[in-house]
Length: 183
Image (cartoon, rainbow, N blue to C red; front, side, top):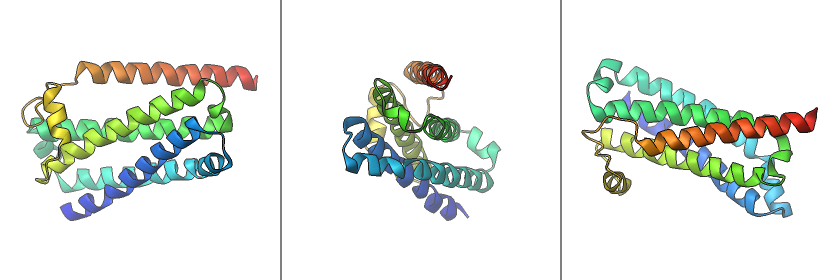
């Protein structure tokens, strides 16, 4: 059954990576191509959320919680997967509710920053999952240089807390600005 989880996680990874690329294209351009790419963004994000939730659920069925929480690597992966899934779901709702106005003014740069943060979270989650199945990546070396030994450290890095706080404030700002425009 573990093979199902390994296969399933590649769907949200591909969908959210494509969504991040579309956000990059749309943030940098108002061209017809960029606007056409944006038309598929919400469906991609929704599919990513659905497939992410399925992969997450299968992962919980495959590995017992007691086994995952017994090691720092398992706890880190479970925590990162939870954050990543929640983050991309929130980003989906923001883009869906804000509509095309999300690309007006400074909000386009906020979206770009949020997509970058989401892609980073996705990378860390995938790296930790790869370690769990015996496939280490070069990202692990970057994490080690940042002081996070994936096999022994279990903590929330301060930069993670800062990024989550900044993302939260940016999402609240988008909601406030969007609320004023619709009133």
